Length: 348
Image (cartoon, rainbow, N blue to C red; front, side, top):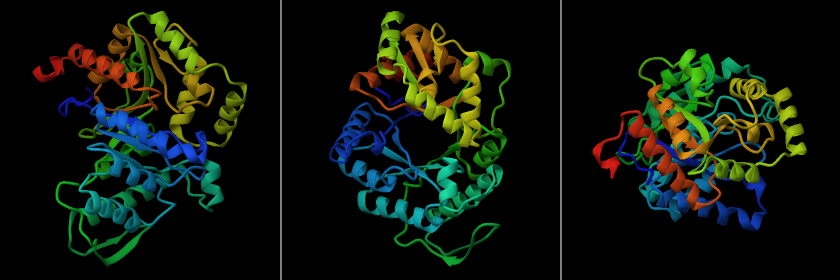
């Protein structure tokens, strides 16, 4: 349903452990991984920060309980040496014969970084993540010893054993909402993932990554045949939350992430309802991405515009039921046809 033969790749998102009692979390995370696996998604993003369980442990469980789903593990350089991250990828490949993708982080919650003693400025964090990612990639590409000398890391004669099995080299994604992020994506060969502006704004003043860099977005989808039905679902899932609004305001004061500031500015300029592009869940601290809400026709129109702008990787928000992935399949198939990207196999 969401396997489009390489034309685009669609990821879902795993819930965070802080949203569930400990006894329920793993069961719920695996349930969503099963839905995503059955739907043919390319993978599932697994978050990391100081307040949730380790994403590598979740990834291990997902690999054990799924058939083809690729965990997209968020990697925070301040948490572990690049050799340790590469060892995780190689070990999971060795144990399961499966591929893992990496969502390379340069930032995170500012207070989390300060608690760890990391005061590295925004753009310098991207420079550090570039070195980190290059080391991980080089360790996994060869079974020979490697050397590396940079500003943040220095290695000599380091070798990955056991070597990563052939064909399992991880795909890499990184935030591409700032110039530093887009430059980092080009340097490490990663997909530059954005929290996108409305397509109409992007068409007027797009700031694409360097040529050759794959482009991705984080976005939620709520579509129904009747647009009013879609909005009823949207408002039932994301009602007003005063506590969430206060948390959002606090995050704005402590975050130096470009994407967070950009979405917050957009939220001040967009209507709460009526336009397909919707930031209300973000404003109420329920999610970190915009939503597209409306009829199948309207939502697929907007997705088609992203496709025409060159976006080919999509990270969807956390699905609440299997029908969310069925809806996404309908939207993406229609959007691919409208964008002139649908291969014959996708038209069936």
